[in-house]
Image (cartoon, rainbow, N blue to C red; front, side, top):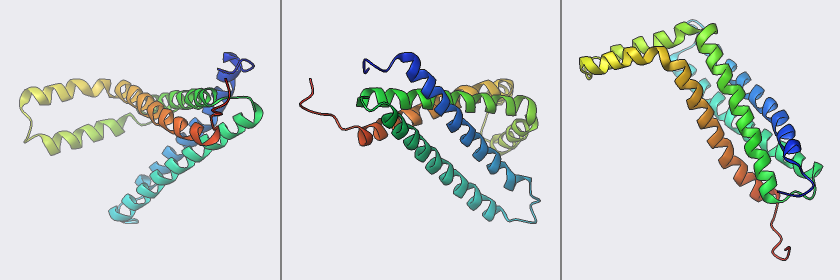
Length: 182
């Protein structure tokens, strides 16, 4: 890490960026829920699927663009930052964003819309009941209560890994290594 950029500065800047990125991700999730609130007759299943796909693509683009902008701002604020430091900033930003989004997912499925998971499990049970034996069905039923926690950790890991990969790519584009620097 660059000598004039402390770990505290890195985490402080990364947490602020993570708050922004997490808020954007939550906003896109809430936007994605809107087509499902409309009556089935007012908008077709195909249009709902297309709209969901467009929102998903916009969310990915927006998140990568905002991460790029945050990392670029970091390089402008700290011109002496090397590639490794910029990448660490991006990973910290992605991790704090993932933590915020995963916490929102947990709260959403525990308190805001707990019936959404029950409906999904009922649909999955109905669809796969002919393919599963009684032990597998019982395991699914036992797993249902743990799904909010499983989703929390799954989102935390998924978003952190996505941010880690995006940060590595963005850092390599933003900061070029000087082969003559010792």
